[in-house]
Length: 246
Image (tube, rainbow, N blue to C red; front, side, top):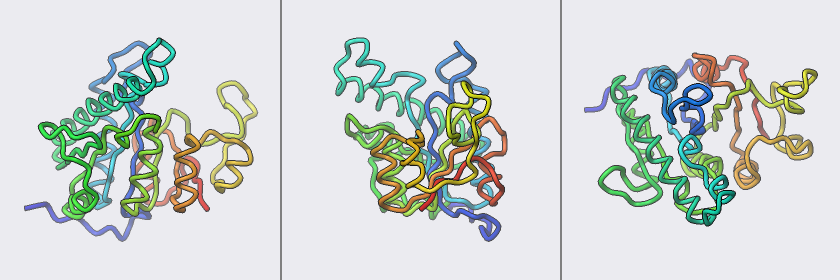
């Protein structure tokens, strides 16, 4: 029997897509592709909001292991490289699943590429049912198609699942008018509209993902995962990161 979820009246968002790049799992500058301590800290944040009763879907990238675009630069065919990147997301998804289960959070991994021995196929109604039963759902293998990023996967799944928001975890604390690492006078936005982000050519997501969010009115929150309670703060409505909205 699933554990009953607590009341969610205190939270601002009831169902979220948490978009994690594979790079957030890497330890240090030249550390392991999946650093155990970093993985656990990330999963603790997921558990923290799950315990509040929030329905959580995770979309994970694979850039810490293999990135299709980088493979193309080394002579790997783009389509082949993208499929290799999709398999990397499966490795990361299984690592997150294992860590969450050890923290007492029931999870299900759903893959856009059939691999029945290690993950369920992506089935929309089944994914929604898992959420209703209090499980975290981890989406791996991207959309199942080359030439689409995991940002696009997050936008697609958010639209399909009727998620309240996409929460995109990064290594900076929001969206700036220019690169804050190169320009000390860069200005951070607390919130910005889709149209203004497009006009200013701000790199929120790739163009396909951003168009999906714009067309389906899915808000995007960009925040720094290095803050140990960042996701919880956002969930309860504290000012954090940058909100992109209609």
